[in-house]
Image (cartoon, rainbow, N blue to C red; front, side):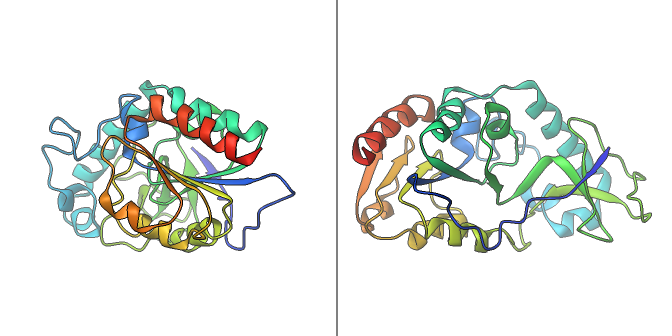
Length: 248
């Protein structure tokens, strides 16, 4: 277990003269790598109510259950690999400035090579102190048990934003979205807030690329929208080709 200091995103400003591409990713992109979601019929969440394993109330009621649940998710995330969509986004950094804002708690973007990833909902590979939330530790795929303590003697908990908890990085994400020259949405139905509201922060003239098998009708309320109603591994390369044709 290694203590880490998280990158501070507040006040982020795009750099240089390269076009600035901001990407919002959701469960769909990770699902293609084999990570199940709680919306799947056979997903990891199937046997547990959300409140039991992903809420402050569930944590207070049964810490062992919550830790076991995230131990399983963490182990699964270690066994899968980034897919073509992850690698395509990492490759995009060779020509553009890219920030990925992800709702996913896995590290597949980082493992594919993306260097600027803002996690809205936390990270599976980290835990933090229940006494001091600034005490954050990298554990990789290790399991955490009741009785595992931080350096100040308090129980460690998953470094995850649970239902009912605030999403502190959403403000930085909104600021980043507002600076975008191009904005991509991949693998999300745009129904989970506050992340779904980031489209409202994107400048009207910024081209918006939506890649998902199920395109929400609400995206058509925005200007300059280009839709790719397909899975991430096939839709992302097409969207990138379109983006490049508009950038150069």
